[in-house]
Length: 149
Image 1 (cartoon, rainbow, N blue to C red):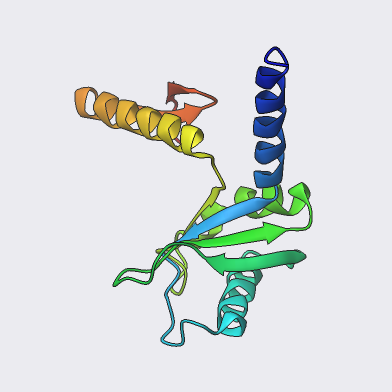
Image 2: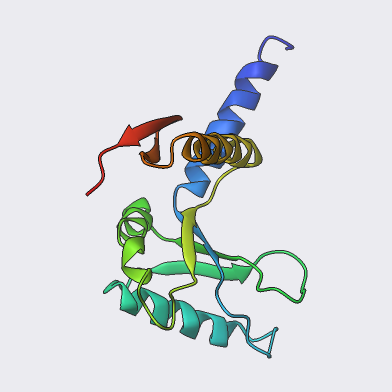
């Protein structure tokens, strides 16, 4: 039975990552005074998606973490992976937006994926310090030099 344990663990990890495939995490979305009202949060999310010209089918919306002075991240679960992909593809449209300019969208990552992403971001920052004239990006699991537009 112990030989099957690693396979079960691996299949559980794959299943968890597939579950995350329909999720996004929204950072920087203003937290309204009425913390318990999910309708207000859903209205904010719909307004955000309408700025991206999207109206995806959403399964659930919830704030993550404990209530604090800063805005907590929001986890949005879509009915399909396609909705997640189309929303994430349009996230650059928020950059110049007055209402949602400070809002950042990212895929839902596991703890291990977040650690790896942080390592890559730290590596990118170090390379930018060393060669500020170059433009660096993260693609896959590597930091690459990209041509400036």
